[in-house]
Length: 408
Image (cartoon, rainbow, N blue to C red; front, side):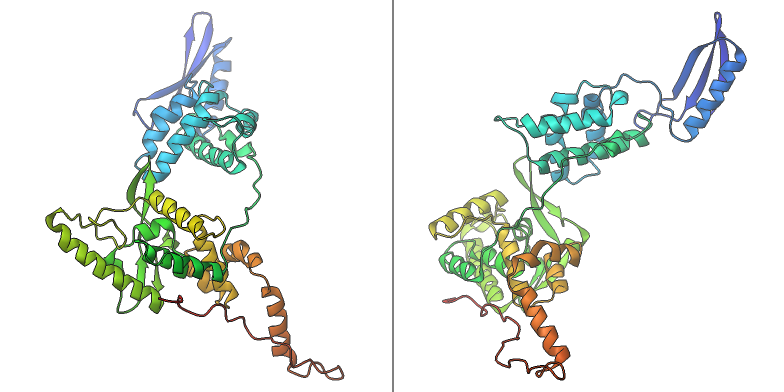
């Protein structure tokens, strides 16, 4: 970067050439005038060069937050983010940010203004009805703005990311809902004649996500080995169902399948072969395990609605389809499956996350651990000189529900 000084009328002005605009490629320049002497102008010019080198000098701009987000940042992010993520960013920005702060100058934003936005959204931020948004939704808005303003800082549009100093609403971790093993068996028996019984069974026996089940392909299933490779998913983008890669690197995993689930998949394979023969050339072979009769992919929301209707008809407590995943995790931990194995099968980022999510939902684990460890260390007679431990106390692992589904 270079600087120069020129006389303009009775005063002096300095000029600093900045790096080119990252989007347009145009040369940018920062200038400031009104100095009484050439020496004062050069002193200010050198200070501006130092600030520019450290990234704390930006060209004055009247660019608004709304223009930056809608005309520059979101288009730039379209090839960076997953389609479903980009669509949610676009929706949040248009619904919650632009109507309130869209006309605010990007360079005049401050942490207090962002926190005022969060407060407004918490109190009356709903779009289609009155009332405020949930803390989780407002926190999502904060995450999006934090990322957008970080890019604005990197692009030399603003001096700093003011979202760093803004505090979003505090979240209270929701307690996951789940069914007991008995309720799961009741559901599976009641859903055995449903077209997507195999999908509901896999959700129960593997803890797979809804999108992973919708995106499961026959090429990822080995019925002889009894395994399923999770490598793809289906997501909802602007109301449409689209294929996508896994949620994270940890989401891509190889799952062992129990014999009942393998047999259900064999039944599904034979059913699909009959449908393929019936439709002939009209069959749309998507390669998906769970699809409609003509091979078309199934929309994840349709499965959610189908699950809700089944659960209501069977008189079961209302939970989400996703809560079958929580039910699987709780049952696995209660049955004594190591937390590390449960975490890996669920595709969680860490074992710590799995433990934080589920162990408090499984009654008796703490007592079971106390008894098992004490028996292992102290032996059946307890400490020398103490009264013998009552051998009638059952300190064995909870074996959990019997495998399989009655009547299958």
